[in-house]
Every structure is written in C-alpha cells, then in structure tokens.
Image 1 (cartoon, rainbow, N blue to C red):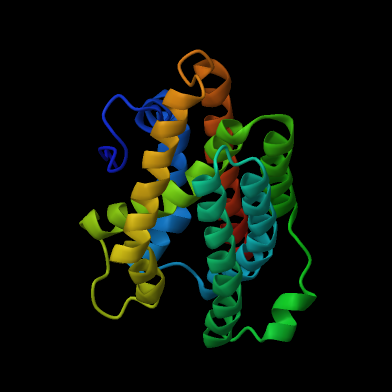
Image 2 (spheres, rainbow, N blue to C red):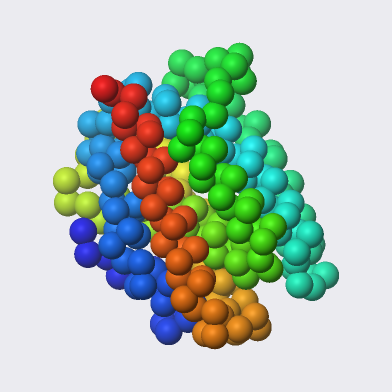
Length: 230
C-alpha cells in the first residue's frame, strides 16, 4: 500500500528517515498482522499473543521513557517526558483490563515471559539510548509511537477493511483516535525539532540506520504474534 507520510514537516528529519527506510517502514506498517486487524481475519491466538507481549514491551518502553527524561535537553523537555512516563504507567494498568476482555487474566499476563522478539527490540532501544544522546534515543523510539498512528490511518484507508463486526475495531479506534493521532504528530514534530537542534543532517547516516532497524524490529514483533497461529 502506497501511503504518504502523514506526520512531520516536509523535508524534516522524520519524513527523511521514513523515506530512507521506506521498504522496512512499509513492511512494518502494512505487515500481514496489520492487514489481519484491518480485515478482521487475524486469528484470536495471534492477537492474544501480541497483547501479552505488548504489555511486557510497555515495561521496557517505560524504562526507555525514563531514560529519555534523564537525557532531556531542557527543563520543559524533562517535564514533558515525566508527564509522558506517568501516562504510560497508567496505560499499562488499563492494558491489563483490555487483556481481560480478550480472555487473558492479569495472572496470565504476569506469568508470561518475554519473547525473544520482545527482548531483542526493547533492549536494543535501551542500548541506543545509553550509547547516544536524546536524538539517538528519540529516533529509536519514533517508529513505535509514530508508526502506530500511521498504521491506524492505513487501516482506515484500506478498501478491504471490515467495517461492521470487526473484532479488532476497538484496537483500531484506540490508535485512530484524535488523542493518539495528536500524540503521533507531537512525536514527529519533536523529532524534527531535535534534528535541527542536535545536528541531524550531519548524523543522518547513523540516525537512518537506527530508524530502519527499529522498523525491522517492529515488523518482527508483528511476526511474533502471527506465528502463534502455527
């Protein structure tokens, strides 16, 4: 599916990174798992596997957000990151309730161990953050935040989308909501701003490699869920 970049300024760092890794980006944003969500054909076992691992992913994502607060370049940025971390921690509790709606008790979720795909992705993000500065970390995080927003828009635009009786409509609605779309736009805008303030042009080769790897790891995370059907 050809899809124009919905976030960030034309020529900004975010759109440049997206275009430089467009093959991996499309493989992530229009993975067969995503198509199954759109068409309502994804096997339940695949979605349940994804939900559990996504909660475990959020634990490490929260750690990465805390690291971003530590590396924040200004007091306003520090406040923003602290607020985002608190929101994410609250979302994690809501996520457990969402899992229960799909037949997964809190005990089921807490008893699960991280899949290799979850470990490889989250620890890689933390490693990029520890090794680099705030821009390196934000680029590693961006495909998750921005990508889910774009995925929701792609689903809404999909001619084959199941509009009535789609079991995954609540998931689609979450990421297509005005609140989440505003979050994705804000993440793209921050990426563009950091690109200007932290020498993104001079570091583009390294940042592009980070962005492309994050997109690849996101696609592998979808595949991990899809493999539950086999």
